[in-house]
Length: 305
Image 1 (cartoon, helix red, strand yellow):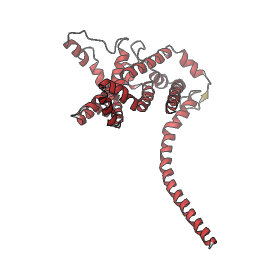
Image 2 (cartoon, helix red, strand yellow; image 1 turned 180 degrees about the horizontal axis):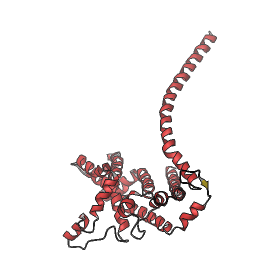
Image 3 (tube, helix red, strand yellow; image 1 turned 60 degrees about the vertical axis):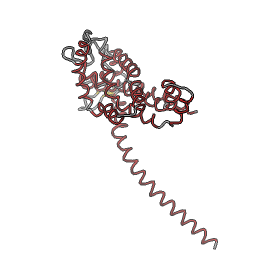
Image 4 (cartoon, helix red, strand yellow; image 1 turned 120 degrees about the vertical axis):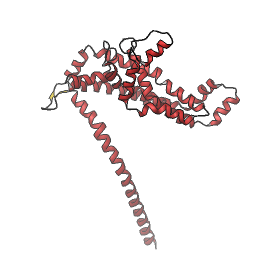
């Protein structure tokens, strides 16, 4: 009797293991497809870029190992320092403008009682436009002659600006374009976070006599702290890789006022034919972004503890 019980227990255990293996094999099958895509389109290019930064090649003949020569070349370039300064300035301005505006827009939409669906569509509409179309649309807006912005300034009797042709306004003009293009995504993410906040917290704050701004500061911000940190990291990573705006609007000018690291990387690879130099710049940028990511992980870990 004991032997039969043991055998029955073994069969049940074996059957459970087989079912678990089959179930896990299906999950691993779906996971492998995603891993293959990441490996082919993300990890392999990063490894290839790392190797390329130490090589000299035209992708026709065999590559030549040159060590740190590519790094010396790009560091000695007169556009190297302006590229990093402009990238940092663009990121800082984007954090001041582009990081706050979606959050404020989400709060406004969340407080509205009517036309919410229509306004969400209006806010998200720029995201649905191809980036090149959106940028070229703003190129007409910035036109010093018949451009929309100067027409508006003229309507209120203010002098027009050389939006893209002046070193003092070119970079902030790119920030405005970037903010408008990405406003919808950030707003909807914040809006989803706001709608997950329990209404009882706002009701308790109102009973305590808290106004709108106090409710935002003492309820909304603490309850959305995690998503604010995540969006902060994503904002930094995205803005430090800015390329399409200077490429289509200013070409890095005027006087290198809008040249960025990503744009300089493109110039080295596809204008100068120095793929190793472009790889070296890409590796530097990747290291900087990894540092920001490490800082974010450390801050988020300390916050959870």
